[in-house]
Image (cartoon, rainbow, N blue to C red; front, side, top):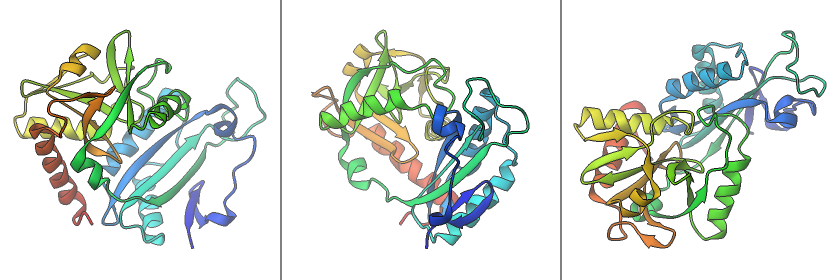
Length: 285
């Protein structure tokens, strides 16, 4: 039996329904989060839920639950589904109303759904590294909002898949922004460089965790725009994300990064990241 949440109520998935005029379905008018679960516990759950509230606020959706209430609901859902290692997906839309580009009135309640999925850690890829392509960043200019409007990301991700690669690294006018579903960092002479958290990227929770690790471990880093040329000449390249953790990138557009194997600083960051998971969640299996 699989359970989901619909508007704060836990129910069997087979009985869950969302109205055909829900604005998330018709307009992509909503926000979402994906939270990693290790050992039956959410990793950086509060940070994800705070970002959810921030994204909702930016598009004027009022979430009718506190972060604490959402946390308790998701923890109950994880327990009912016996989830050990996987993810929790959740989204809020502006609600259900007759189709109109103008926002509905204040009487329309946001639609809230959540479900879990069993997903293992990508241990083999984290060990060997991934191959990537470059693609023009054609997304809208509010990438800091984790909205349901992901068509630009999907087109880039599919382009990467068609090329036999795992990820697409996006760029605007020669400046690297992020990946189709992850943040991108490079290593230059022992220093990590990553795009600043502005409207051109989503400020990933794993990205934030990584930068906190750098501060705690005295690893030099810099938040600044960097170019495709810098990317191609980098000593190491890696991506960060909820489901990929710290993922080494060993090839960009068929060109090897470094010696075509995960670099030493990336390996060190993977170890530090795993320790953070152990502190919060315990067993990684």
